[in-house]
Length: 323
Figure 1: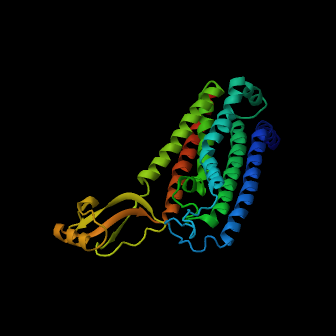
Figure 2: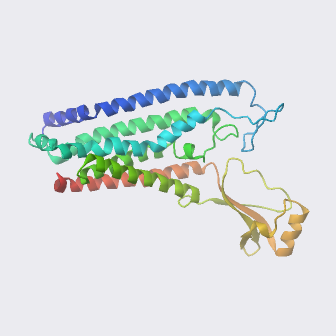
């Protein structure tokens, strides 16, 4: 195919997608403006000295005069994280599903294909433009979140790395999720006979995938927690920025792990005596350290990116049969 036909196909793709691209640019501009405003207020609050006595760990910090908890205004930041989590659903439903499905439903693709444009070029021009826009939009939104979040990251008065809006609403997984949503919507738009049907199916698929990944985070299915041990005679060290898996207990010399309620005493003589009587040599708990933020990120990115590639390949293979 010559360059003029390719450029013409790209131009047509841009005309069809420019409204959505404009909406994405407006959302990004609004997010950046809101982030700049609230981040400035966050920095002013931190510079005021009100939080200077607060420990950096998870123990809540309170005002010394009233005992009222001290918290930064992070709710708008969490809203941006929620938007980033919802991106694959939004992009899949409103961009991916109509990408090929609209032309198929209206039959306008036949006119394009009679102009010397191959099926592959017709698909590539539309999908490449949509993918480039999705990557740019999601990457910049993830960057805005990270920039806004940094002053309040992993503080008792801010937002910890393992909270859903931070863990799933930031980093490279946001970009991979956006591409997955686009690929899923595009494939379903090709398979379904009506765009509305494709949009409904895309909503179910991308929403289910989002929930499945959140479930893997909670259960630590893909990123197992670390095991930390401590003697029962002294208090264990604070967890700090670790994300507890909710599993606590006692360990025998043979390595058997039992329920913590077998010796339900705080650190001290009672706990030590109970442990000695029952043959326990240490306590344990399971948690993910702060460094596992990147393990979760790259695992999600690999899963979502791999699925996006697979769905795109299936779409290409089905083009000849469906168009």
